[in-house]
Length: 456
Image (tube, rainbow, N blue to C red; front, side, top):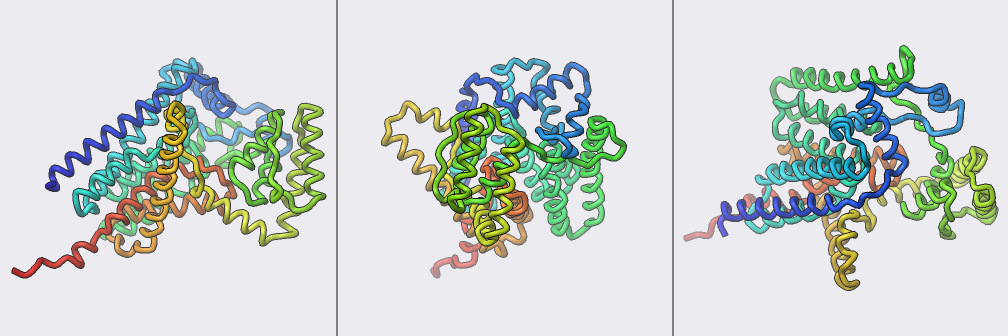
């Protein structure tokens, strides 16, 4: 097959696979809104009706300052603004979810098409070109949260598109940085990544480096200024913190579950069921440092079941247990954080759409497909590690280097710095990771280096 034919076939396969992903996502169940979704939708609806966001109440300000126990309004307003535009003023949950799902899945598809085009220079033969199209089109992880009314999917697509523009079209630095910076107006921890990644992109500019830096800074500060104006209006303060403090009712429980080595489902299912008054799943023996700690945890669980309420005193007990474990066994605490960082990627998660599609399949077929997806996940992770090891071979490709730096920085930020191990928080790194993995597998440069024409 000629390269031109392979190019056309690969693009066709990619478009068909992405169309299938969007159609699959649109088979969304008309479920009610969960609490986080209610927050975003409520804020968007208020904006649609009043053309401004609600201001903090006295209780909001007390919780944000740590003077009262509760959930602080720590989220930026960017995603609520997106919902206000996307909803067109219609907030009935089924219709809104379908509309949001369509927009979010289409944006992910656009990002993947751009990645496929960017990888053209690294696919050395028709086979690798077609394989790249199939992997980008069929991998379920970039589409995992497109059905959820939360900022993760939008942040993922905006990030991938911004990386593409910064790496391939540096003259678009203003729009690329603006798009990248919008992500921290949706997820606050993202604020550290645009300066880091755009700063690295600046190093690839041999000419007009200062102009690149100035234009990028203007774009970043424009978003920061808009967000800070919101914070001033929301808090009523002249100089509020850039973001509200992250205060939640179950912070101590999460701190305790983060102190032992376990899976995301083991830890988070326990916390959510306990704090929501539902029966708590049994914890593994490795969750407890000793019998005394087990007794304290079981006492808390029994009290919550008896009263039907999870209190600040319960959460304080969990927080004290977490501090004690870290003080008495710091090596174990470090090991837990390292494991949780790896667990962001090393897990068996896929997306709801795929699982729903396989519900009607026979058990052997279902297990075979899920097993194949798990192997693909591990292959992509291995491909990314190969890319990192061989990064020097890609030093002239700004896009790939920026993708790799983003994956590494995002993983360290979420897992090591913040200590979270919810795989949802790295969904925005899946497209950059896949990009690097596919480039590494195609072995750019090796064919040209070792191939020699046969003598006549």
